[in-house]
Image (cartoon, rainbow, N blue to C red; front, side):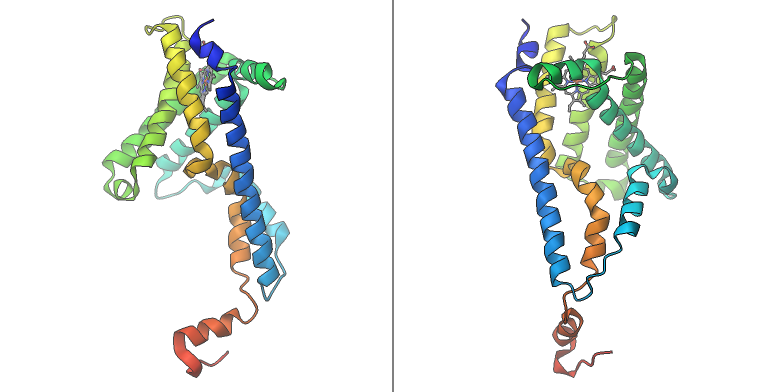
Length: 234
Ligand code: HEM
């Protein structure tokens, strides 16, 4: 059996997935716990749950919210997310690996559809990488991890795509070893890097709603800090 295939059913792969799930669960629970604490401390505990849920749902598929100033950037980001999610979660080969490890699976998307989404993802990811490199304002806001994650994701999309093509010029087992190992590293990195937004993103709107409900006496205390005892409550 080639090394990459034995890795995909090894304890290393199961460890990476366990770390991913438990790491993301920990982040979600900590955020929810912080919010519960903030609501408990708040002077006004009326939270507009319905509005927040509605806003969160509309941000999950942000087609109507494409950024006007950076339209192409937003579209590229959306396409890259679509490509990654579709291939990670709905590629037959990935689902076979999941089935072999945990006995769970679900219907896959057709390979030609995923091929197209992968190519679109590669184009979109390359655009985002070049944008970070060449647009000064974006470069100033980027740190090495931003580049590293984008390069890793591009490497996964390109190696996975090439491996599935009959004209692939790179030896198959070596290419798949690269794919499987970098995929495992990425799974491990997710909870510890900005990709953790995959679980935290739906909680952001609730977090900012709660954050604006200040603790009882929060206003007067802020006035005291800013203006000393001369501050007057309005
Ligand atoms: C999070 C990380 C990963 C991403 C983003 C990713 C992405 C991809 C993509 C884009 C393809 C090609 C899809 C297509 O064009 O139809 C692919 C194929 C594949 N991936 Fe992954 N992958 C990841 C992790 C893994 C891991 C960890 C393994 C194994 C342990 C793996 C095993 C495979 C296999 C077996 C194929 C099919 C190759 C073929 O067609 O011969 N992937 N992957």
